[in-house]
Amino acid sequence: MTQVLSQRRVILGITGGIAAYKAAELVRTLVRAGAQVQVVMTKAAEAFVTPLTLQALSGREVKTELLDPSAEAGMGHIELARWAELLLIAPCTADTMARLAQGRGDDLLTTLALATPAPIHIAPAMNQQMWAQASTQANLTTLIQRGVTVHGPAAGEQACGDVGLGRMLEPEALHQAIEAALVSGALAGQHWLVTAGPTREAIDPVRYLSNHSSGKMGYAIARALRDAGASVTLVSGPTQLDCPDGVTRISVDSARDMLQACQGVNADGMIACAAVADFRPAEAAQTKLKKGEGDLNQITWVENPDIVATIAQSPARPRWVIGFAAETDNALANARAKLLRKGLDAVLANQVGDGVAFGTDDNHLHWVDASGDTDLGHAAKSVLADALVQRLITLTKD
Ligand code: CTP
Image (tube, rainbow, N blue to C red; front, side, top):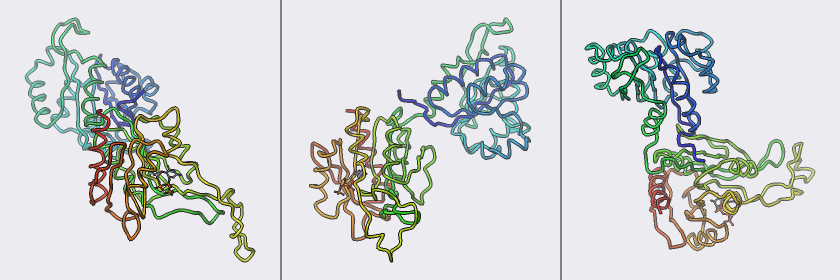
C-alpha cells in the first residue's frame, strides 16, 4: 500500500485541553500514513494525556522542555524547528492562541512556532464562550493574517456540557487536512525509486573498479520527483552530493548491494540512473594484491546482475520502470535495444564521451519508448529532470 505521507516530517504540538486525548488517535493515523511525527507537549497537556502514550504511538521520545540539556544534546529546538515540514497544534487552547498571537517563546512549543520556517496549522478547542470571546477572536484574526491555517473548531456538545462552537475537529478530518497541505502536486501519493551514482566493486582492501558517474542526473531527478509531490527513495552509490531534503537516501557501494536495496523498496515507479559497473572480481582479495607477484593479472571478472532488468522482470515489478542508456555511438538504436532486452517502459538515451554527461552540469536526453522517441534537448540536468518528470506525469495519468 502506498503510504501517502511517507517520510513527511510533522511536529504535533499538544496543548492543555480535554481534546488532548484525541491527539493520540491523530498520531496513530499520521504514523500509519507513513509520517514521522514528533510530539511536543505543553505542561498543561500532560495533565490530560501522558507523554508515554504519545511516545508509544509516535515511536519517538516526546519533547516537553525548552531548556532540557539532554534533549538539546540530541536534536536541539532550532534543529527541530528546521526539521519540521509542518507544525500542527491540536488541540490549540485559547491561551496558546493568545501566546502565538503575541509571539511569546516561553516554552518549547511557542519557541518552535517562532523558529520554524514550516507552515503552522492549529486546531482550536475550547469552551464555546472562550471561543466567542473578543480577545480570542482578535487573536484568531491576527494568526490568520500571519499565515496560520486554522482548522475548525466544530460545533456540538462540549465536554463541559455547553453546546456551541469549540470542539476540536475529529482526528480523521485533521489527518485529511494535513495530507492535503503536505501532499500536493501531480505525483502525490506515488512512491518513486531512483538509482544514482556509480557502484564500486572491491578488488582488494585498497582498490576497486568504478566509473566517472557523479550522480548529478539521478539526484536532480529525485529532487524533481519530490517537487512534483512523489515520495522518493534514492539508492545511491558513492557521490559527493547532498541528499535533497525530503528524499530518503540509501547509500550503497557495490552493484549487488544496490540490487538488494532496490528489491527492498516497494515503489510505484523506478528510474535507473546509476552507472552500474558491469563486472566485478569473482572474489575480492582479503589482502592487498602485489603487482610484482603478478596478482593483478590473475583477477577473474564476473558479470554483475542487471539491476533495472531484474526489477523490471520481477513479480513485484513497479508499474513503471525506466532506464538510461549511456552511449558513445548510435544512442537511439542502442536505447531501443535496451528497452526491449530489459523489459522497460522507457529509456532515456544520453550521449557520453567528449566531456558530455559524466560529471557535467548539463546533459542531452532523448526519451525512447514503444511509440517512438522525443528529443528532450540539451540543458542543465535540473531542467532536464523537470522535463522528464513532466513526461512521467503524462505517463502515469494514462
Ligand atoms: N543498469 C543496471 N544494472 C547494470 C547495468 C546497467 O541497472 N548492471 C541500468 C542502468 O542504470 C541504466 C541501464 O541499465 O538504466 C543501461 O545502462 P548502460 O550502462 O547504458 O547499459 P548496459 O546494460 O550496461 O549495457 P552496455 O554496457 O552493453 O551498453
